[in-house]
Image (cartoon, rainbow, N blue to C red):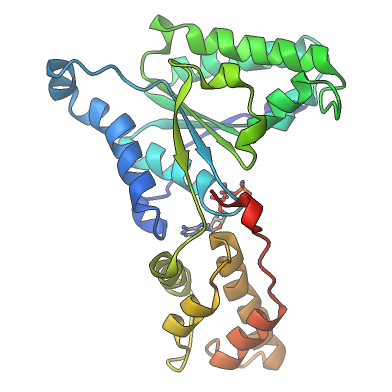
Length: 272
Ligand code: ATP
């Protein structure tokens, strides 16, 4: 029961336009998941078979979760989110049951997406070692349960699996075989244009003074993730409030102070 709490069906309201940049990822997901659903007759005519599983990989805070939610919203799919590590906070046998339960719910709610965040947790445990699951045994059986569900071809109609990881190199190869997570998409750090878009999206919901130069901010945030850029904006709000509770808008100096404190966490090793 502890971890089942983390498994939920929610109607996400994230749109493609809420995500700055990532045009190629958006397009690939539209083609692989949205088009077969919105144009089934064309897809069938051309002999297409729907993608069952896709893997998003890339550094933290670069919109993997956001992308999964947007896909669900835009394609009109029910959305189920499961975090890999949560499947291990259970007693032996419970994790496997939870996996089957997730797929059962997703089938009942189809067309739907199951989003497995931090999917690498499953593979890491399988090797024993750091033992998030307390040893190889538990991890292996959870992974086996997951593979079994993925391979249930007929029953998986209209259920798409989307998985995400920051550590693609430790994913168990069994998960990446054809018919499983066989479409792999890199979700990288935002480029200049994407950073400008992220700043636009975020500051639209803020009150900022006209002297704030978003182009300059976009240039200065090279190397920062989307999450870090959003965080700089939130910090700027705090600096503005520190100055005065009567303040009407976040100013240039507040962004400047927030920038000074910010340190990008993405290392070159995390890049493609
Ligand atoms: P993690 O690997 O840490 O789970 P993630 O890649 O799944 O990270 P998200 O959870 O999607 O990242 O992003 C975190 C937050 O950062 C989002 O809720 C959003 O506020 C912001 N963000 C990140 N990238 C973008 C983007 N491209 N456009 C708009 N907002 C973004």
